[in-house]
Image (cartoon, rainbow, N blue to C red; front, side, top):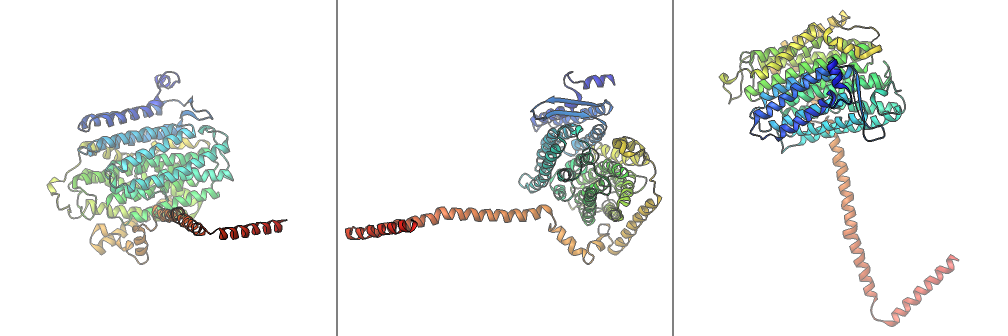
Length: 627
């Protein structure tokens, strides 16, 4: 402990906080510099970086509170970093996920020509995320926060360099949220009179404070992938490397967004339960979880289904934290950790299937449980967790959110429970279609060629699946780290162990039973697991709504692009009109007057004299009238 404390002392040279930011960045550049042919060297540097980051994160976790400040640009824009309870918790959680997904990526990306670039962007993302988590100055946090757009764009164009639509879509939506965040931070700093994050406490959510709160809220939920900044995520499932989906939309961006949202609610602003702003946050959470899981329910591709669930799950987090109740905030943070575990495991399972069969299209694969039993087991555990089945981790965090929702307003609880039903129904469909039933493989894949993924891919999946069990059965382990973050707000409450309300537990179990009955009925109607929810998809009224949704009629980006195209057309028309005035109208007027003057010059002296006298008479008359 003394050694770590000495290492953190300002003035002792490079300290642990700066290492966690600089080391991944330097090793990222090294990965990019190593020749493309030397995959082993690139992978070695990459693994060294994620392992070192994990070790340093444990160092931060054990370190005492510390604040680093180096005067930089004046106007209180200082390079300020801070270690305290929340930064310790979030840094270690992110480091574990980055390490596991990193190990998986080394095996998954073997023989991929873009592997070196992916490693570069992966480590750049890690450095920037660490900076955002540890920043103690709003401008410094914005620097790292905005830098993540660079790595996001880079990862999205790695596979499809000739089609950057998804990358542009992600930048537009995320960039819009970030611009709002900048505005919110400006108003917050003006309201608080400081740019130091630890000096901003319990600002009033009224007047300029209300605008600052809403703008910062938009930035936080935009990074987390909430509606209306979400629609690039399902598209990325088709375009981006699978480890990207496990790292960013499934885990790291959720942690960044929910970290900031929690600080907005707990630290920066005085959000009161039942207030108008609390209601706004809860509505965003409820809308996000309901509509995203509704879209997940009908997907026929494993990666797209999981990507919509990556959106819906953040809705539970926002709903819980938005209640401003201790049980909701604890539940939202616990759900953030649980989501990172089971969602990463689910995406990595999809990657194992993609590696074995070349596809994640559920219409082309089936019965994989016999050929990939360990992948199937990890998937089942993670699916039970996200569906909220006891005693897995997702059950306990969802029950806390349910508790907070019903205490705030019954309608939010009903929406959350309906979302839980659709979550369970979609994973029953997905698990049945992919791992059970008759064997189904693409035409170019032989059954004997389908086998378990390599150990380097299986190990992270097994660890994540095991964590889903441990964080459920022994939920006190994560909650003992989460609950102290609330400080006095917790008011001595303890949410570890079995949920306090047996009534809500029984309702949740009944909802899970209804999902199973729904699946059985759907399967008997169609004879295929993948079509087990088609009776919902194609129900009267819902069929038309789903069709519109699948045609992107409700996509915020596409709606925005309609206005952009109208604006571009108006600008084009104005530009053409201005060009016509200068290039056509003025030329014709000049030519007309020139020709007219030329016609006057006939050489007739008498005519010139008459026109001169007429002009003089006109001037005299004008002078008389003016006098």
